[in-house]
Length: 527
Image (cartoon, rainbow, N blue to C red; front, side, top):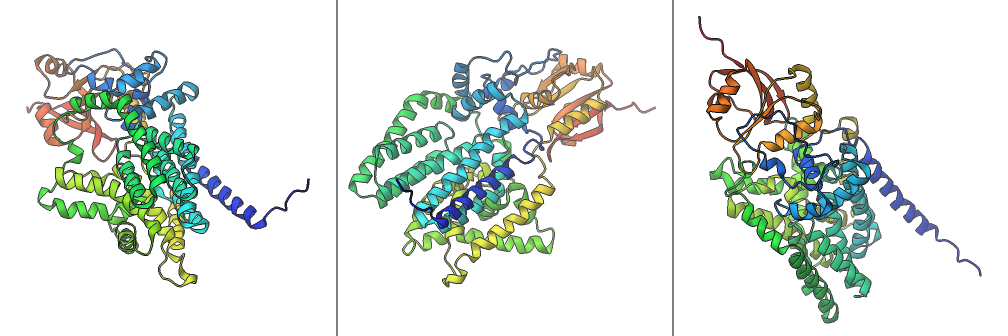
């Protein structure tokens, strides 16, 4: 049998895709453990260990000497506890279950737990290429995959031990199954893929519900009768099974949630809420491309270059958020992205306006919309001249390449630097110094700070105390018997004076822009 000659063009295309994937792998694995874990990542370890949010149940107002380790696996509860304990958590259980299996094999070091997200992020680039190829063609798929490979938001999610890299992978995989059913027909394998990825996505994060609604509307608008019936049946089956598996736990979570709005989501200027919400939404494209920290720096307009980048990113926001809707009559291939953006960014923006919250200011609540921005920028066909049709995508890729190069030279600052703060604290604190962890916000228990510090100081035997209110007489007398102690929490002078009158701050160790470790000493009485 003679073999058909290989297609040189196809070989070059396959080589280009492999090069993109190799670059994606390099960027996601490079310096993956450079930044300190922050409290949500350490919380992921606690949940995956089967302890739920046990840090929230540690007793307050009691000085303790025993060191409670909430992140180790040596005496962790069994696998079934991961599922049941997640019912007391705020997310579904799939990511903690998968992370538990991963930690059983590779351990719970920062490098180990972040590798899981990096692998999902690399796989996402490959699936995103296939989705864009089905919708827009191979040329645009290469451009879109290149944008996703270099995008700061994807690099951040890939190097963070949280569920968002996995969630993006599952959402894009479900969309790819939908588009393949539309283009190639509803085979059993494609219907099973749609059902599986939607079910797994819903079991990963509730934000996928917005994408699921977008896919349902897309099916209703685009599919013929036969394809529509089968695709909707697969989607309905995924929703029914999710409700059966997780519905009771979801109801339990809603009952256990604290009342009110978390402090970090409260609008600081309620009289300007509409204006500020629109500004946050307008800045999302910059965050999807440059990453949340880099976008914040650019929009701060510290230099003329930052001002030019701000104008350019606002222009890109108009293209990615508004222009696809205006061009739907001519560009039917934009329909999926327009619906997807409405089900993610639109949902969060509406919730912000209705509840006076600031969720659109945190990329994690809208990161599911980031692939829409990448695809629209790659597929944008203005100016209409053929020689200029990819100019916008090429400019974006060149800009991202420069930002990525800067990232390789100077890695982004961690959200919370518990690693550095713990080392600095351990070098100056006495072996018997008391550590007080304080926070009044019912959504963030002071135990999360105890657990974060203990993760990086597992051998410390210092006494510790959790407070959510002013110390009672017993705790106050024990504190007063000391000449100094350490206070961990959101630092303000007013809070310190209210809690501990007669004490003053001698030393401050920064963890983040708001959280610190402060050494307090008694004020010497006036002579």
